[in-house]
Image (cartoon, rainbow, N blue to C red; front, side, top):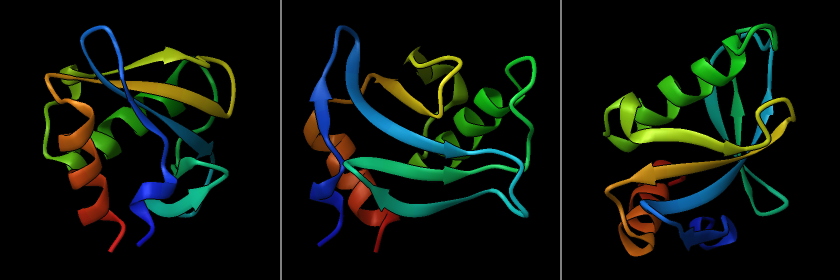
Length: 102
């Protein structure tokens, strides 16, 4: 099972997890796990927050939540980011990530 490899923890307003972003890809997709972080490939370039916005939209669609419920809380300018999913606890987020990574 791959999902437990993604480190999920409780944050202030919801569960937090790390993502590794690969910008300027040929397609937007969740591509697995790398070093405890969800690997997200996006077509957007890392300019003016475009890649961050694309990551949030892709994750929101995959997790079944509104984009406004996801927020980059650390790593705004880095490839490794911490995302907070408001309204989800760690157990619920783990379950959703498990379904995505099957």
